[in-house]
Length: 152
Figure 1 (cartoon, one colour):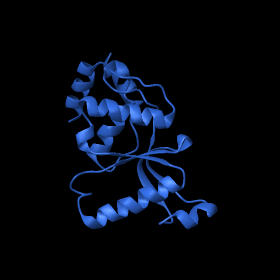
Figure 2 (cartoon, rainbow, N blue to C red):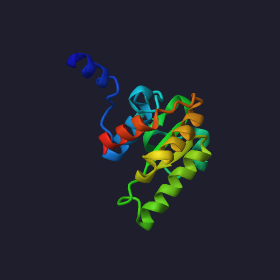
Figure 3 (cartoon, helix red, strand yellow):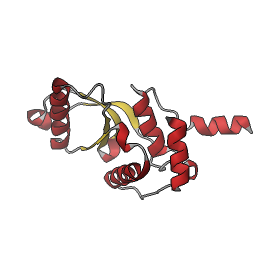
Figure 4 (tube, rainbow, N blue to C red):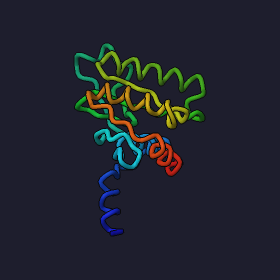
């Protein structure tokens, strides 16, 4: 029985994210609804986007490494920790990156720790589901809250 659970859990393993907050975000959005997740399809993490020739004039950078990405749906989640993204220089960089990505046709959602519980998490999941063109699948609130507490 234990080996079966481990094999099931490994299906959700991704390449290493850059922070615990990124890992928590991916797991909450992609784990099955029956255990408190939102059942979204598996994303890429630390995905590199390079502007095409016709996008260079609207791009601030030669490439973008984004936190969580569904390339086939041109959908990105950028996870912002309070510590790293609080300085003016980082806010400026973030704004340039996101504006460029949006101009190139990417849907960009920003996530903070404050969005990863309760009703705010439900809304976030619906927003990302819409960007992905996926069905809204909401877990039972008790299961959702249990999973959030387990991942904290």
